[in-house]
Image 1 (cartoon, one colour):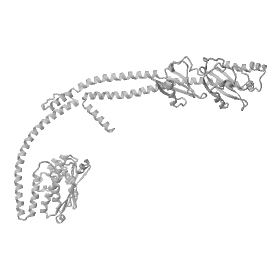
Image 2 (cartoon, one colour; image 1 turned 180 degrees about the vertical axis):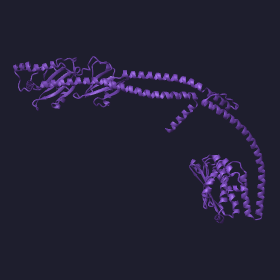
Image 3 (cartoon, rainbow, N blue to C red; image 1 turned 180 degrees about the horizontal axis):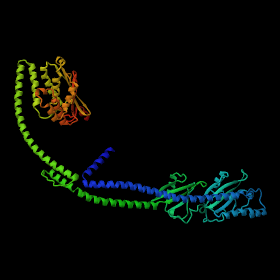
Image 4 (spheres, one colour; image 1 turned 90 degrees about the vertical axis):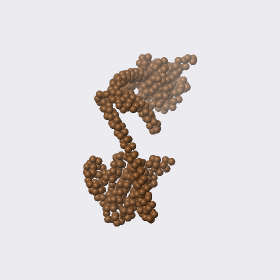
Length: 637
């Protein structure tokens, strides 16, 4: 994943690098304007959408609560009718009769008690039926209220009512046929009722009848079946079985996939006052719901959001189109203005192209202010400096040729010296003066190393060989009182060092280390160590000789890092005998290291008077044998 991101970033960088600065500025300008517009428009339209949904919820929630109040009134009316029909003692006695009534008794019951029940129906026109079903063989049917229980034995709700043992059951009865079976045709009319069903017990442990109070669906849910609709919303009822009821022939639901609506309803929770949105087909809908506890059903208000959402989208598209036109217009104006601003920069670019083709006599006649004028000024100064450098380079080349001739002459003189030293060495060996012979061998090696200067950089091993020859010669002077110890891993012998950079450090160790009696008596040990750390290569040259005081050490560090002019002012005019130990060798080494490798490299000194002196040289880790150390080569393989 990180590789793919890096590759994509590199690809984008390559593309943008090939685009002109004017195009980049226009692109940046568009992005700077476009991103805030996108963020602000997203926020505003999201708030607008949320406010629209909330307003829609508030408006339709009132209609939903109003319809629920009407439903609760109907439930209360049906409950009162049920209560009134069974509180009459004459009705209970008729249902509970232990013998068949005489004709006179039937006439009296019909004229009084039955008439009261009929008036109940007439006074409540929304109630379709009040029926009492009994299995008492002594009770005669009086249509349409008193009926035999056998007429409902095949109804789906019958067994459930019996199982409830007197507990009221509210049910939506769909496609109910005529209970009297007066029509024996397939086209018999049917109705859908909201019914209150209940067993009647009197006394408490004796069942006397089953009570049924019916109200037509369109009377019970008046809003659902009303012919006056707003066209954007409609109500429906979801019963406990998942059945959905709404007005017949309602165009609002004809174009809707009701199964998708049912699935969306089942997928959401239904706390009181809840609402949710769902897409059915291409149309978004808002669903508001309230529970009708008696029916164990929910009243749903289904609101189409197509019109408000379409209006929001239309407004959003107009806003985006206006923003795009505005950005295009501003971009065109900006492009034209930038063309005027960058005209001078294009002149400067064309001048640079001429210089690249080799025309170094380009004249930039530009009197512009600001950054472009400053660039033109610096470009003219750069061309002037380049011409000066070219002249200087030509002069240096001539001087180099002259130096090569001088070097050739020196090489001829050096060969004469080498041959002379070789003859002296042979003479010493003939005379059995082997000490002199070895000294001449070391001296010859030192001369070859010093005079053969093909490069400023050498391998550490060559610098160490040169120092070994130097110590061998100096031991003749000090009667073998000098001991050289090397602690350099073989993998570091190819480390790059500046030629003749270690010898001044070893010379100081010999010259200053032997300045005390202990050193002249017991000798001096000089060690050279090499180690590597995260910053580079560290070479340590130390001795156990005279050391330095804190004041001398501070003065030495000051000389090593002093400015040239100040140094020559202070120390350059002293007599030659007073310049002994003035730190010029250490200073030269420090300046050479900094010049070649940078200011973070160089040398520093640690010393304790009468005990030791340590000189640390910090260099970059550079291997002259191919760029890798022995360990690195092994790891790479």
